[in-house]
Length: 194
Image (cartoon, rainbow, N blue to C red; front, side, top):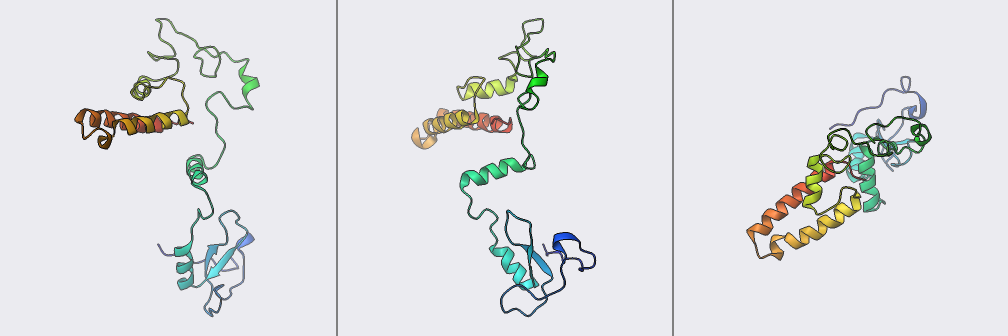
């Protein structure tokens, strides 16, 4: 993808406004018409390069430089919500006081769990609030309904080590069990555990 040229200074406003000048690469005498970020954390300005030097700069740019693996994973998770804070339904600390006076017929706001007629809890035929598919995936990993992301990951690692074909001499039954474990784990990861 070819970098976009910046608009002329007369059309650009704010922090990006500048007068035409030379490439910021030391010793280059070409016009600096392509901008590149100075840092990932601040948008306080840009370098201005010629086409050849902006290509070289972009090729060497590492957005995640200096970040740990955990920081990178957290960043990637937060991208899905545009880095805005989120809470599980009914647990937003700013709204907790207002929820105490609500009629919570289905127990969705963390209050007492309601049981509709017929003995079915919250519209599901298992533990309160756990859909049947999710419950089956948890059972495949030998986990209870209320479980954290870390508990799921820990159990998954244990089961993979136990049922991996290399640890079982290529046993077809262990291989099938491992496939079930992988499918259950992928399904649970798509459910939004935190």
